Image (cartoon, rainbow, N blue to C red; front, side, top):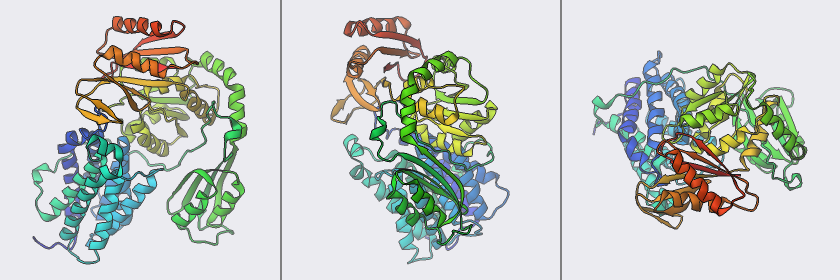
Length: 564
């Protein structure tokens, strides 16, 4: 094995394109690692398309030093990121690029430091890091690289050990995340990262087939804007007296500036002190600015803490107890006003929503959505897709409804890149998105709309009806290929042989004494008479229910059911 002590721009370009090619070749294998036995596994597709965008930007870069190429790769991944796995991958390369800035070549130590930086940034990008995921793989791989760089200058040896450590970390994911062990799979995002790191090793050792150095084209990079928009979200069912930390406090500090500056910024120390003052803590920084969002009982201490590190640029404190009481008092009046204006959307605010199915798109538009991005299960839109929809709206501000938890991180990245104020209402299902639309008032302020829409979506229970694509055991349920399942609010709750039984048992589980409305959205594989038959069967359970039927034309899920 030939010794290699430096990586030039030539090797780096091959590494990035090899990683994109490896993910493209193995996307379907990664998709099949989906925990749920449903026909919509998309982690492999998301990571492949994300990396392809990074590779395209690397190939298009005009500057050929490694620092510039890494930065271009990072930007491409940022804009092309799809799904949570793609976003985390983009953060790994963001940390990598930060570490190698201005470098002409990379040594073994440089490579180890870059991987360590990638792991650090990735962990910080996730509010609640979970072990047994892609994060575990990058942490273990980077730690091994750090140790090996102290023993050798040979980058091939280093990357061989990184490859081994990554594969060992991947094999450990079922022991760290019980649901993986129950289903008998490794983490899909971690598997994707293993393919990336293995491709790096194969290129450097000379074993990668250069004919595979191909990656699909992707969109051009739009201007990057890093403003973070975060705020409290009210829940209409929450008693104001039950709010433990009542002040939503947002502070922006210009690091190292002003007359009060007396401490050098250290992220861990800064974060640790704030963590003792409240919850819902978010701290994001670059070299010049640190932004804080926290729910606390002592906003003055949060502000004072910030002044030790620099000059205050922005301070915002909201009394969430008063806000919550106002939401409760005005809920009925606001709902009536929202219904009055829902078909008259104002150009000042664009609601950007994501869904699959022409019928569902029309439902969203009828409720006031400005743009419906085609996507969702199996086809998560990229950060660039969402940014483009925001910019094309021409609005002064926007609200994003992802309608899928796997789109949350891309939607958040889009909100930070947009040139206008953008908020994300974290709708997990189509049903939550449609219900959230009922809380939109074109005459309200952006933050008020976000609060109300978030409150509204909490009032709906959602079920997705689909067919199992493999045998498995999950949450104690034995599932066979071909069984019909009802996924209720993200959990497989019903497994039966017949589609109609799956719907009826799901409705029975979702109904309670306060239930009034059941909505049936039938998909492209279902005829309207089947939906009407289900309506009669549901009324046989409770004849006082109001049943609504809509033709959603959605793929993969013959029925989407909501109960309110």
